[in-house]
Length: 330
Ligand SMILES: *[C@@H]1O[C@H](CO)[C@@H](O)[C@H](O)[C@H]1NC(C)=O
Ligand SMILES: *[C@@H]1O[C@H](CO)[C@@H](O)[C@H](O)[C@H]1NC(C)=O
Ligand SMILES: *[C@@H]1O[C@H](CO)[C@@H](O)[C@H](O)[C@H]1NC(C)=O
Image (cartoon, rainbow, N blue to C red):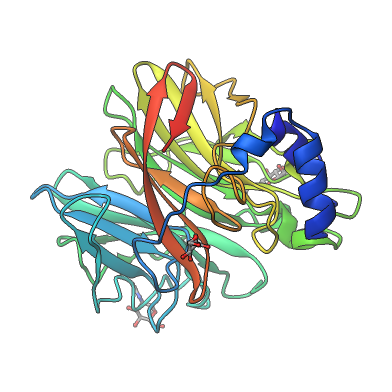
């Protein structure tokens, strides 16, 4: 309930009025205000984290450009760490379709014996928009070789960002991503709070068995509504006990209203139903600000996400529990 109210206050950015509204929305808010104190597991700027367990059981995390790298990487023996940031840049040379800058939200999947990197970078010509590209390597640390053409690049609707891989039970590979509509919005928070609001749908694109070649056209899984503020983004799809769980973030990442949300469906192509409340918001259930950009482990047991920290946006990790269409986090 509290979080539903939270979704409706996106225009209220003054922290005091935000807090008052948040409290007044829920009878149990005082209890919920006792946020659990947590610390980042990677305490450098490491935004939009993705997580993968390699064949040798080592865990890897990947992040948006920063610290002199296009694609950052860290490894650990378990999702909770301790994590070691590695010196490698997985993608020193982004695709020739891009201007080779602004490499965001990388995700790596092992498909057969090949590691496939999904990423976005700004278009070579229309440099205010991103496209989603692929790159491949025989080793997890690369360097990855970028494909010559992007995987998703409809610039007329805002381009594409936040790609994340998914393999269904029948072995078919997909990628989910966000149409970056707010990049062509009309102003305000994240460029898309002034009418007409531009759609920011989360899309599902089927792939061939190589994990890089598109098969057919993308379909829309979910879009923003009034409660989400200017956008939804950062999709990540898992399947647990027959339920497809689509994690995403609502609101603008530069405001404390950014969150980790999810929607569920009983079939891959939807319809997806948003949960009644986001999973993580500023101050609930953790003492963190501006959480978002989450990715779950494929077994649905752990979640990595970022939140504000002294260095920028650090990586956090927590255990999650999935019961039917309900996700809880501790
Ligand atoms: C990108 O273009 C450069 C020349 O402009 C070429 O040398 C390079 O091989 C191209 N990259 C790929 C992955 O083909
Ligand atoms: C781009 O999106 C528009 C609007 O949905 C659509 O009409 C058009 O066919 C798309 N173009 C491509 C190349 O997919
Ligand atoms: C959470 O609270 C603890 C104790 O006050 C503090 O040390 C820590 O920095 C806080 N974490 C964040 C992310 O604000």
